[in-house]
Image (cartoon, rainbow, N blue to C red):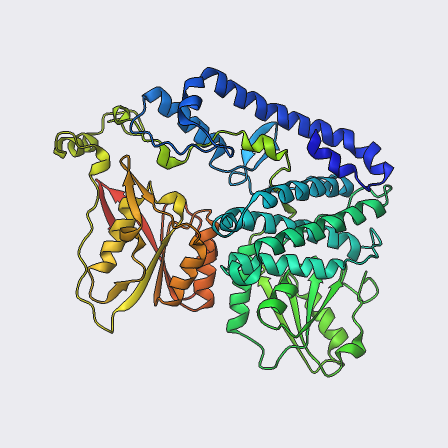
Length: 562
């Protein structure tokens, strides 16, 4: 495979002979799987592929007024398989989309093998980034955030190698500086500051720098090393940002000179705290493997004289027995001016240990471009597919009555909640911003409009950026958000939060967009209202005090708020 050849440049013979064959076998298998599925679709449905005139990235821009039931089923199948993303991974011999498998339990595979895959992943990302122009970069925030997220995580894994003395690294590139940059760039980006944080060219430069470091890493790796423990616990970006919000509300009375992080207790935390709260503070890391007595400490490398008369903030991912913090306080209390402590989780917080992000896979970019994907605006559900049966397969009278009320030629898509006129507002009206993930707009338009009308018809509220009315259009009986070229959807939301008194979040679900807006709203101490469905996980939102959680129920085609 051509994409693997670059991985052999400047690498040791041990790397090539010991791991390339295994790597080639895995990615060849992946390539064959993609090729076979694609070729099967093309050969059996050639007229559809020819008709829709797919471009180089697998998207069709031809609007289809109506489709047969067979065509609709095919396009639904394609949509479910590829979910509009150009990145895939192989798991249990099946192709999965990143949105379907975001985290998975790590298997203790050799670190060198992980590093090789990281190297190839970075090569793939550089190809992708080089093909983007500036507008792609600003508009495709999900892709950029994903790239930054993977780089952040993989660098942390390598950082743990160095801190554990698994690999001695000396070179022009400082790993700790690289790790700190990866962490802070990622968190700044997902908080909606891409214009001021990192540009397209800067990201390419940064990724190249990481790639150079990986090359050095592979050349110096000791092949006798087998496995080490993966980075664990506290590697949940949303939790880390929520921690920053909590810390800002309860800051120590003095300025902090040193931020001490406890490995493996959320190695990111000290860098995030330094970046967002104490930019002048110095970061130090300690590792305590056993704290039952003072003789079994594996590492404690802080110079106590360095901390003399200084204010110190100790960070950990959580408290279980309290012995970690007690040990550190006993060792530092005679030197420091003041010692403060903050943790991410309380002892009862349920955590999943040993988690690693799967990433994008790192396959050949040209193969990814061949995958066929139709945007939702390019096809419509067939009217003939309307079903009058409920989930149990029995005749549903409610659906029949709704259809009977419709005028001739009117479909179920036309029976929507109308826009209700705005009530008279005054300067005392509270400003409300309503947010929803783009992927839910089509299926949940009536819910959104009901919530919008609820606030808009009340004199006590005024809608900020009424995008539900102004930027949703109807295409082939579906409601679609009309994107504005060159604008970042997340960045717009953060700007609207600044203007609002109340932030309404609809269907939190597994949405990076909604989670990010929640954290920004919490940091800015806005009142938050969350409308959630039965299956939405809302546990992470309950810790915020100024919040109202409202379940949404649909009953007999009407919407009620409890």
